[in-house]
Image (tube, rainbow, N blue to C red; front, side, top):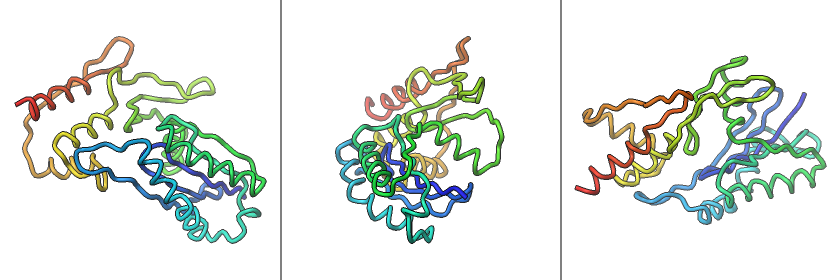
Length: 222
C-alpha cells in the first residue's frame, strides 16, 4: 500500500492531505480571508500559511491515524506551481523539510494537473474532457499523446478572477468565498444582464474582461 502526504498552498488556502491507495484519509485546511472589498496579498497570505501549516500538518496526521510518519508515509507531494510565489514557498519549504527528515521522495505537482487528477479520483473517470475553472485558469483540457493538452482557454481573464473582482467592487465578504457569496446574493435578486461567450476559430474564448469592465463601469462609474 502506498501512502502519500500532499501539501497545497498556491493561493489563499493552505491544506495537507493524506491518501492511501486512492482513499483520502485526511484533508484539513485553513483559508486566509481578506477584508470585504480587498483581495489577498501574497505577503499576508504567506504569513497566514506560516502560522497555520504546522497545526494543519499535525491535524492531518492525527485524522489519518499516522503515528510513525517516517515509517508510514512513502512520499511527500507539494504544489510547485502555478500560483502565488510567497504562499507557494511556504508549502515547498515544509515539504522539502519533511522529505529530508523522513527520508522519503519529494514529488512536485503541477497545480492544474492536481485539480484534474483529484476529479478523476473522486469520480472514477478514466480519460475525461475537462472544463477547468479556477481563480487563475479557464481552460478545456484533455489527455492526449501522453500529456495533458489545452484545447481552448480564455484569452482575457479567468472566470474565478472575474468573480473575485466583482465581489470586491460590491464589497461582498470573502468568507467562505467570493463566488459562494455572489451565488447567495444572486438568489435574492433578479436577472439584469444576459451575455454570451465569443468563440474564435482556435477554440479559445473571451468575454470575462469585457463583462468585468462593464459591471465596474455600471457600479462605480455611475
